[in-house]
Image 1 (cartoon, rainbow, N blue to C red):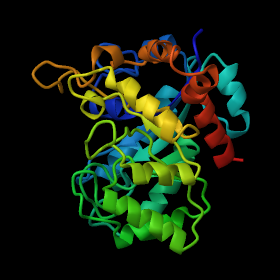
Image 2 (tube, rainbow, N blue to C red; image 1 turned 90 degrees about the horizontal axis):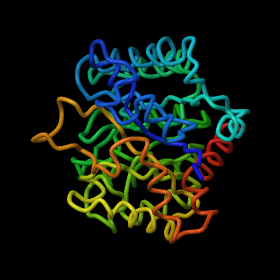
Image 3 (cartoon, rainbow, N blue to C red; image 1 turned 60 degrees about the horizontal axis):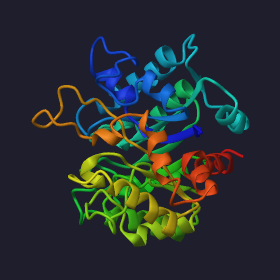
Length: 328
């Protein structure tokens, strides 16, 4: 049996924006190319608009929003825009791949020296171009004007981050913890609670620090906070977050997630451009996890250890329920 798949994070739009002449068919370069998605039976794919924190980062995000609308969706028999009222049909019955946008790094809304008001104007423009947003991450691995990132561990939530959270209150856009520092994540959650803000929480492409100790993986305290708030945790396929030498540890992350966060677990593979970026010719992914065709073989490996209901929850059920609740 091939399970329908919902995935919470890939960088296809960033690849298309960065590399002149690139297309969504470049299956030797990026793991979420159209042939991979189709073979893996992906039925809903989140397209995260990634940008580094640098000058003109906001222009790069807008470029991706235009590509989302004008290249991926325009006249496509492959992709279709996510329809909040028809999610179950799109995932279980539609042959095309539903796509939804997200923002990975709020620097893509506003450069470091700009007035913060510009961030809110650009956010509305991105929604106008790309439709409903699933989530926004405040930063990438380093700090920016909004918060600390994974590799700036002592830096927490900043005043501009607080203002962005206030703006998101009640907007039905989740905040993503995948790239926040631990300090920023806990500050963010405390700020939401203290101010009674209505903001869902996810970790779109994060593994578990209890399984493999890496700053990009969630400590158990944050795992439990995501669970308590009805959020999602998307399993990341990058080998440096799975285990650099042991591909089988991916199953350990999944099994740990089923034990600690059974209603939160989903996929967030984080496929991005590899060609020209690989370290010493090695892939950033283990061969067993290198592209979107691998979802089905991973689920088959799990069949002997977990129930059919758990396989359904991982493959699409948890993410579908979260999205239905988010946009009801």
